[in-house]
Length: 76
Image (cartoon, rainbow, N blue to C red; front, side):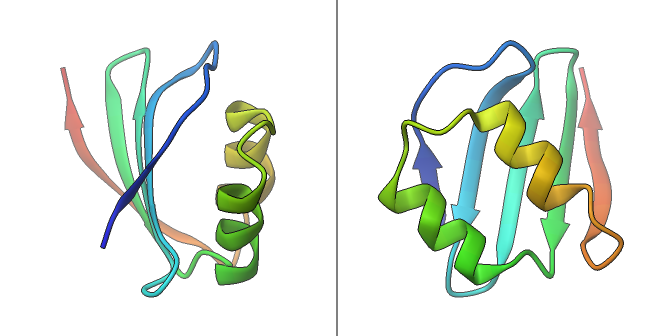
């Protein structure tokens, strides 16, 4: 169940999160698309409850962690 997170960002076109699976999918404005696993479910729920947060800051804080796995899906 992916949920699209609203808001604007200077670096992120689209952010989809799944609080049950602990996953995120990010389409960056530079054309890269990454899928992330082992994302903190707590961080995802906090983001969904407070979508006024900076999406770019949330991505940097919660997806660029040594505990989070990622894979490049596409580049367009």
